[in-house]
Figure 1 (tube, rainbow, N blue to C red):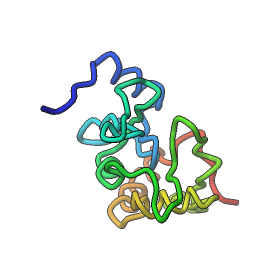
Figure 2 (figure 1 turned 180 degrees about the vertical axis):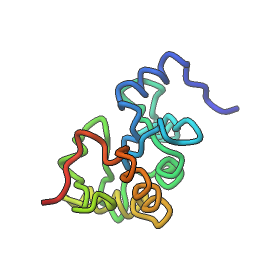
Figure 3 (figure 1 turned 90 degrees about the horizontal axis):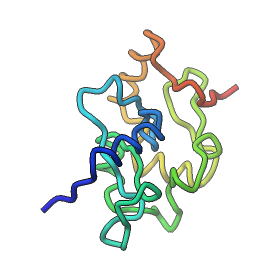
Figure 4 (figure 1 turned 30 degrees about the vertical axis):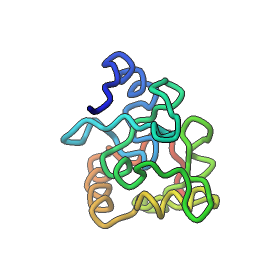
Length: 140
């Protein structure tokens, strides 16, 4: 039987994330489906349904992350312990997420942040001023 996180807790996670996927920073407002509530530490490894262990994740990031927390022995980005702008930056054209750190690189690879389909979505969102997220850094 699938786990059910309370609607109240789901709303707290969404508001804390400002309705952005906490991994790739896609905006939930412009998607066709609600984003997933991800367990940062997977239930299979003892993770809990607590606010401290939950993150908002778009369908693709959640699917690619699955129950992984590292790739090639490099930890992937943890939105509860790390700051997004310390590990990632947008390319000058604001279409690609670039790594600033080894953790950023591992996360970009595992979650496939810059796959062709998402680049097209970002291009379209850029044209109507829905991208990039307001507080994110863009490469000089």
